[in-house]
Image (cartoon, rainbow, N blue to C red; front, side, top):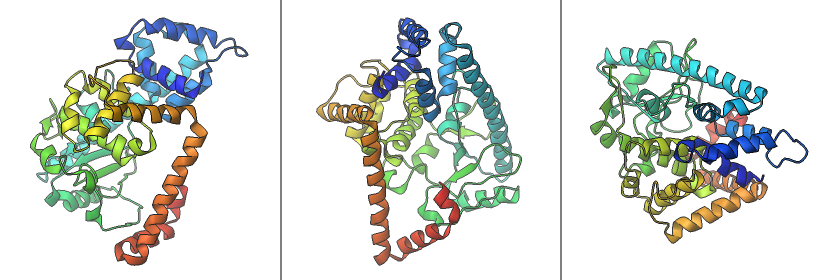
Length: 360
């Protein structure tokens, strides 16, 4: 099985609810994998892909829900279950941490709006608390509360060890804050996304349409439409998924789950990036094998995007080399800008002096 075939197989597993007959194909492939010498399906490659995309808990729960686990190797089941159990406990700790942060800020008349994975977790998007792997806790506050919020949390023991590469108001969030004894880093946003993407999706509209989380007074999340927009911008624009032909399975799965609540076609006219949004929706429904679920046609630009993405999946090493060159070019351009721009020069200088940056 090629990497491209494995990628699509993984997508189909995430959307098993839509095509339960695929269950037999999953069972067949895992049975075939026991014949190590002749099988084209390598379990280790599947595990690696799921790990790379941080979807092991989601895959575990999906296989469990469709009664597939009993057909799989015991060591595979045990490994996935252990990771799921650890992630479930971590997410429960994250929820407690969110409650503590909210209580502290509410006392100062600040109502945080939690974003991204934390928002989806709070809003019941997932079937299980342990389904989504979450790195940090992102939340949005009013611009006038931005620095005050950071000072309040720093007064409660949160610290950061990051050098300020640029002026703090040129960033969308405050440097990541950590506290001893707390499970997740915290990122305080005054913008939901970077400046260049705030034309139609900005703090004003997120705060305007925020919704309360039931039984959690003073705690808010974005509307479902805004969760979708944020997922697209983060995955395809800020993480350069569109440019590099890379999509996070976490983002694709969040799109799928949100499609059960809202008409995701609305994304097309809500971001200012119509062609890119359509391409993402079309590619997602191909990978998950749910035709016309997100968008009912395939314009030429979307077909071209999908073709280039499939070429990237087919020629992985060449594609990775191409990405490395693109990233190198981007940093080279920034160094050139530093010659003529004081702020850019300060950014580059501080990064070069910050030893931990080289380890990232």
